[in-house]
Length: 195
Image 1 (cartoon, one colour):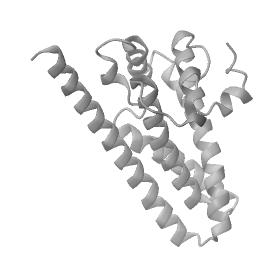
Image 2 (image 1 turned 90 degrees about the vertical axis):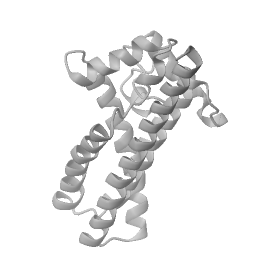
Image 3 (image 1 turned 45 degrees about the vertical axis):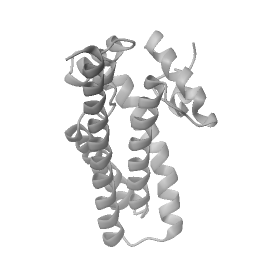
Image 4 (image 1 turned 30 degrees about the vertical axis):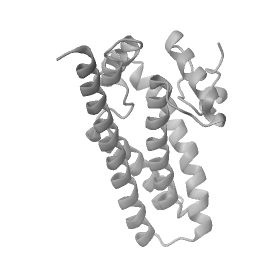
């Protein structure tokens, strides 16, 4: 197998992993959203509020997951993330691009977040926003995976997301900051967006 065939094979494997992660996210978000919508009847306003709250929740989860799990090298996720940082600009970069890792890790993220969201929003506070939160979390997980992929592969990004490429690539030069990939809300709030 020559270099071009190896790269094509690695690209196909990485794309399939990205597709499987997206399908897992859709399944893990849509099914609970539908079930919670039936269990805790709600209104379109609650769905909308839940969606906005879910985007903020997902951004916070991304920040804390990236900062405290992925940058802690003594755990499995940290070791896998070190491979991502070490592979930038090498032929192995494709193999370590997926933020979600594998479908079981995507499932675990949804289960962990889903239990917390459902308990807080529905059982404890009775807000009736969980369906919207699940949909937003799903959209965010798929978007971050796609944007991260495009940042590293030089893919097209809309003009309003182009700053995300620079923001994230600075993280690779100086990994002690800029933990949000493309929407640095929690980097700004917690002071880690600085150079």
